[in-house]
Length: 105
Image (cartoon, rainbow, N blue to C red; front, side, top):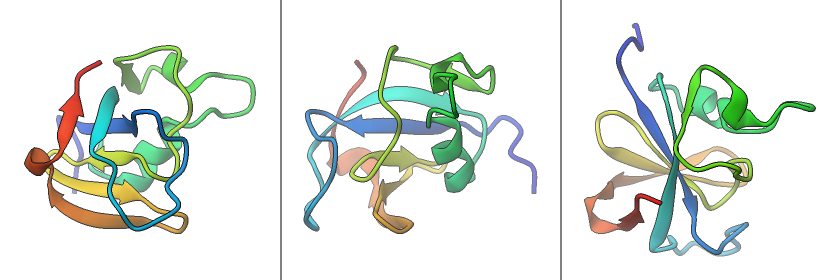
C-alpha cells in the first residue's frame, strides 16, 4: 500500500508535556504534517534525531517551529480523520477528531 499523497497531521497537547492518566487533553496545536499514514513513521519523523531538529527534515511540513518532539499525550491524526493518542507504549485509537478542540497554531 502506498502512502503517496496521504498526510498525517501531528498535534501537540497544549500546555502538557506528558499524560499521566487516561483522560484525553482537550486542546491540541497542529505542529506538522507528514506524508504517510503510518503512525510509527509520523512519530519517528517528528522526534529529534541526534543533533538535528525534526522540523528541518524535508519529509516533514512543519507548521510550528521551534517545537518539542512528539511524545506521550500528543495526537496523531491519519488522513482518514481518525485520531490516535500517543501512549507510553503504542497508540490509543480515539476515533474522529471532530469532538476535540484543536488549535491551528
